[in-house]
Length: 313
Length: 261
Image 1: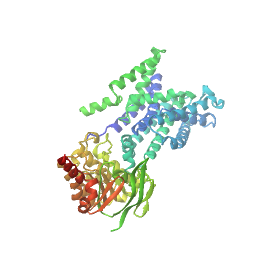
Image 2: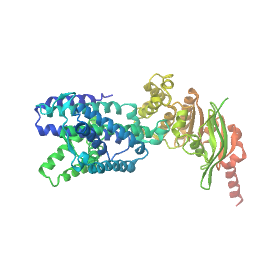
Image 3: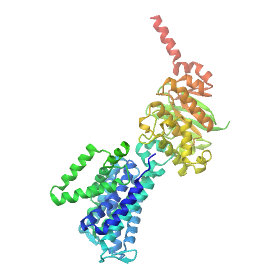
Image 4: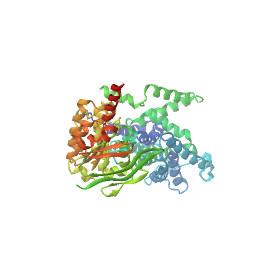
């Protein structure tokens, strides 16, 4: 049996990204940072897809994570990035555990649309909440990490970038262990045949609920990291188009490996950035054509290219 | 022998159709019971009610003295009643090995405790490997379940029910779709496995040779009722069973009419 190189690739890629960070141009560092944040969110989406459900409302947790960390920073004046991330984890875990009680009963389009409805409720609430900046949102300082002030120092950007790389590595490591565990196999079994899973004695609803909470927490971490990287948050993070982008990247990536979401997110961000740079009025066209190509020629996502090569080898 | 499974006054109606009418059955531990009857007689409805897929309109089902009538399929499975399906219910995108490993994982992860998995085999992988050997599935270990031939799908379906350590196993037409040459070897394997694990078995079957060879007791169903219950030789020679189940009397009558005309 061939040895799975996923962990080695994940570790090597993380070390390389940490090593080249200081010499990267600012735009490239930002592009990679935001791509990794998206990758963490899509990693959670991938887990849901492997369980046979698709959320069209993960912008909810992406936004909730960002606002939880932003509120800690601006309202409670705790600007430590580690505390901000912890707040994002706690808030998204609690929110998804509660909403999951309802969502676990639904499948297919009903699951997708109900999750979308929740995200639009949050969007509506935030737009109307002047204390949180309404539709403009608010800025975030995130000036410290583990008690050490980094804001205004020469290494400020690199620290935020490195924090994302480390979080992406840990998220990838966790997900690799998880999808290769009993729960990971059970997710695929549920996608294939819910009836049989119940007749083997496992609760399909419980597994979907647990995976929903995990994916929501990952989306929350992604949102908090984007808030820390960009320094600004607004209700658009919960808008349905943001959730649609996560689904887009999920399909673009494929569910074959935990590395796929990071690759897919990087390609997505790169196409978006350059398309927006060179064709600001029609940049969506480039994304649309990309999606069309992937669905037509790589229905298993970009990662299926690597799978084909491995099988051929 | 102790009664392990009992149905009392079981009724199930689908609108005007009575799929089960006053079913009263007590099954002893370690028994091998055949359920026979023509299509629509109520055999699968009975299995579906025992395993919680259908709730009876009235009546009770007890397992080991505990009322399980209102329990879900998952809860009933956890108590020890497992089933296979007429159309195999597999995880088609997983390998044969992983199909079984899912079941072992469910047991290990707390459904019924680690001890019951480890008492015979050691580790989950050992349990799966011994099941593969027992059902002669080792050659198909890494094949995806979705591409298996029908006979192997049937075997895997039954192995998946066995891997979660049942006390009572219900098999819905285990030899349907299996070639005439393979069906006896399939049943031999299944019977060897159930004897080794001391499992009580109820199975739906249309092949009377299989019923005669492998069962100690037969329940004959007709229009939702049990019309005969007893030793295979006695039940199969009964006039009602010959008329409504095996169709022998009907064929004989039809033949006589044909000659008369």
